[in-house]
Image (cartoon, rainbow, N blue to C red; front, side):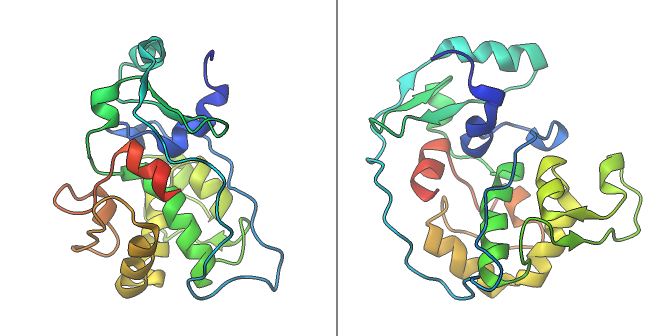
Length: 204
């Protein structure tokens, strides 16, 4: 396997320390047609992917982190044979805060609970000035993921509410399932929810 295509799959599964400062451009997954939104937790079709086996070491991928002068790991799951490959196996197995990678789960929960209708739902700017220029305007769910808009997802978290967040994080079996603390920042709090790429594979 060569360089992961645009690191799209890696963006879903990797835990990069400080990843919020360098947000990946990840397209939102397709959503259900209008009128078919699920508003309560439901059992989805069972995935055919085999449970991941012990990670295969792919140290050659570390060059992409070295180029950007950041620390992290890439975890890629081969959906044909269920084999997980990691650029740094110890980091792949180490739990840490999900930070910006939690936007994947957050988007899923927002869609399932009806807080947003689809990828084009407008998330209004709160009027505050942020250091990231792309945050200082209205975004959609799609663009909020692309620019890693923290205030957008904080607003989403407040609308979902702590009880529904807790319910869905447990349903997803996301990391240690600990969403205690501030309802709009728990995914950045080191004392609370954490996960590792292996767990993310199983959750997603």
